[in-house]
Each structure stands twice: as structure tokens, then as C-alpha cells.
Amino acid sequence: MNILMLSSTFPYPPTRGGTQVRTFNLLKYLSQRHTVTLATQRDSDVTDAEIAGLRDCVDHLAIFERPPDSQRTGIFEKIQRFGRFLQQGTPPSVLNRYSIAMQTWVNNWVEAGKCDVITCEHSVNEIYIQSHFHQQLKTIVNVHSSVYATCRNQLATGISENSLRDQINLPLLRRYEQSYCAKFSAIVTTTEEDKIQLQEFNPNSEITVIPNGVDLVSFPNRSNDPGGHCLIFIGAMDNLANIDAVCFFSKEVLPEIQKLYPDTTFDIVGSHPVLEVLALAQKPGVNVIGRVPSMVEYLHQATICVVPMRTGFGIKNKTLEAMAAGVPIVASDRGLEGLAVDGASYTLRALRANKPTEYVTAISQLFDHPHLRSELSHNGRQLVETEFTWDIAGKSYEQVCRKHPNFA
Image (cartoon, rainbow, N blue to C red; front, side):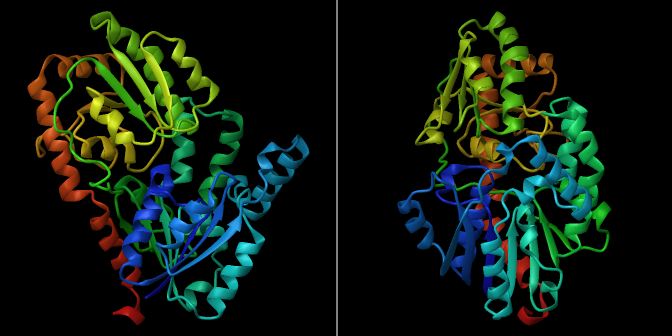
């Protein structure tokens, strides 16, 4: 197959995390078996060496400059963008990354018949798909998480950056998600929860759940339990859901843990920590590490990895990576979304907590019982090895691409 993949975020190196990890690993798998062309955008921090590294992974690489950040504009421009959202149905967050040059290139590539399948890696790239494309090739949108469900959840949990704006946007996002999904031959989600949400909007759509995976070479199982009372959180620290998670944990959970275990530390490891996160370093035991060369080294040194997410839909890379590294997990329902980790039908693979008292109980259990840490470490690693590798995800993605009359 000739596959055209669209990604407005530059998916290299895969250590950048976030959406880039999924995009890169699916691209890597498909490029071993098919002719893959990637159209992407570069930010100012993308180096020539990174471009060369990504170019080696695909047959063709088309790079476009990211449009200027229109978020840093005045009230008049914001009103204009909202007006376009009302009239055209496309959110400002999508329009902000829209490149006319990239659109022209995509149109020409499709019209020249150079691809059999076109995939949008993250829903923000749907804007480049013309409604008539599906008449001549298969169109796939790889939805990392439902924008409507995410906005609704942020309002429900009270962590919205601008609740009035999001209350106005919510019905518009519902309309937008229903509209853009209708353009595609197939839809891919990371969790069953997102599938159910999108199926409600598009009952006749072909929707496939393909969870994230882990590179088991980059995240090897740890050889020993370090013991102690070291907690860790990993993730990009300019992400709203991650910011809320570490602030909630540092302010409402950690002090209660330290009453029982005074030497407890909490390492926040991830790139681009915002001021609100940096301020947490003033609290006893909190270490804001920032971006590191090797995330797995920090994971291996931790007693427990906490994933206290209160919002953010989709399967969490951070949870899978910690499990792969053999680190016991204490996480919320959001942090464990898409994972079968407890209940009568499953071996225990993580401890679940949502309220501060539940975190204190779960973490205390693991601090006090090395055998329980060992059990979660073994079972978590086994779960990733058998169900959540990028090889498994890549095979499933390839099958979605092949479900077309031309490739039967």
C-alpha cells in the first residue's frame, strides 16, 4: 500500500512523548511493510538532526513550517476565531495549526493518485481531508481522545481553564466531532470509552479500538525493587491534565502521606514545567525534575508511580510505560482508562484510587508490603508484554488500512 500519514506535530524523536509516541511507532511499523509518506510540521525547537532521523524512517517526508501562534493575539482576533467556529464549525485549536501550504500539497498528492490510504494522526489533522477524498481512497482518523468528552470532563471536574468559554464551546464541539467523523472511511480510538462516545455521534461508522503500546527495549523491566518511599509522576508538564494531576496530588495527598512516612518524596519528571508546577518545588519532598534524557532511569529508582489524573481521555502512555518498567502503579479511573487491572476476572495489576484517602490507603499498602509491590510489578509488566506493544498496535492499524476493496 501507498500510505499518506498526516501529523501536525513532529513525531521524532519518540521520547518527546504525548501524541508523537503513538504517531512515530505506528509509522515505524507501517513503513517496514508499505510505502509511507509523512506530511508534518516543524516547531522552532526541531533540529536538523531530528529531521534527518525521521527522514530515515519513511519513504517520503514533507515538512511545513508551523503557522505563527495565533493564541498570542488580542481580543478582536479571538472574537474573530470564535465567530469562525460558530459559522464553519472548526475549533480555534484546529485552525491555529492549519497550513495552507500543507493543504495544497495534500490536495495535489491525492489528486495525483500517489496514495491508497490517508491517515490523520490525531483528530486535529482532519481539517486537511476533503469530503470527496473517500470516493477515491480510504480515509482514516486516529482519534487520540474525544475533544467533546475531554471538554465535558474538564467542566465536570472543575479544572477548566475558562469554564464560561468551555460551557459555550461544549455544544459546538459536539457538532464539530459529529461533522468531521462523517468524512472518514474508518475511525480509530485508543479506548472503548472513546469508541462508545464517537459511535453515539456516528452510529454507522466503522470504529476500531487500537490501544497505545510501549517500546519494551526503551522501557526494560527493572532488575530490583529500590524500596524506600519515593513516588514519581511522568508526563509533559505543560499539559493541562498533567498539571492538574500533580497539583492535586502535591496539595491534597502528599502531605497526608508524609504524616505517616515523613521521608516521602515526590518526583515530577517531564518536559516544559509551567510556573504552577515549578512552584510545587517549594513544598516539602517535591522535586520538579523537568525533561530528562532517560525517563526509564527515573522510573527504576521510584518505589511507586502515581497517575492521579482527574481528566484527559484515552489510554495513558505514562501508565503503560511505568508498568513496562516494572514500577507498581497507584492511579485514578482516568489514569487506568482502557486497562483491565483489577476486579474478579483479572489478576491485580495496579491499585485504584480517586479520593485523597484512597491514595493514602493504597500507597501505604505498597510502602509496607514488598510482596505486593513485587506482585504488581510482575503482573503489570506481563500485561504490557501480552497486550500493549507497538507491534500489536501496528498489526491492528495495518488491518484497518487494508479493509478496502482494493486491498482484499
